[in-house]
Image 1 (spheres, rainbow, N blue to C red):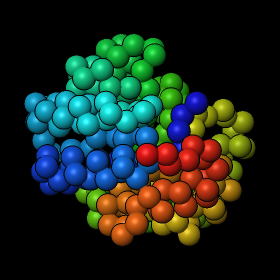
Image 2 (tube, rainbow, N blue to C red):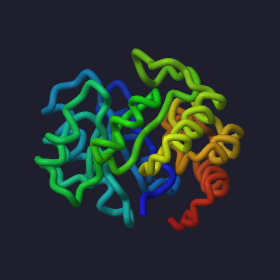
Image 3 (spheres, one colour):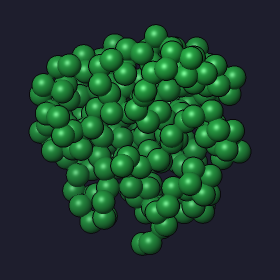
Length: 216
C-alpha cells in the first residue's frame, strides 16, 4: 500500500537538497521524491546516490526519482515520477519492470484519463494553489477544481490509482481535499520552512489518516 505523505525535494544545489531531505527524514517522512530540475542526468544521479546513502539508516523509506527513469534504475530506487512532457510511461515501465512504482503528473480530466490508461501506480494532481517551488505551473485547480475532477471520474465510472494533491497545500487545506477523493498529499516548501517539522508531520498524518507514528 502506498504511503499518503510524499516529500518532494527542493534546493538549488546538492548540499541544500540533501539538507532538506535529511530534515524530512528526521521529521518522520518515509516517502521521498528527488526532484532536481534543469540538471544533467549525471548530476541527478549523483544526488540520488547520496540520498540513497542517507536513507539507508532510516526504516522503510520509499525513494522516487523525478523525470529520470535511468537514474531510478541505476540507484535501484523504488520508482520514478514523470511529468506530462517527460519520458513516456510505457518506456519507463519497459526499463524499470512491473514491480517499480511509476507516478505521473495530471492537471485536467484528460490528463487523468491518460495516466490511468498508461497504468500509472499513482497520480500527482495539481497545483492546488500557486507555489514558487515549481516553474511553469499548470492552471491552478483550487478545491473546486479537485471536486469537479473527481465528480467527472465518478460520472465516467473510471477506476483510478491513488491521487495525490500537490501545490502550495497548507495543513488547513487537507481535510477538505481528502473529502474530494484525494488519497494523499505531496509537499515540499511546507516542510522546508516549518519551525517544528516533527510536529508538522504528526499533524499531516492525523489529517490524512496515515497510521505510522514518528518513532526516531
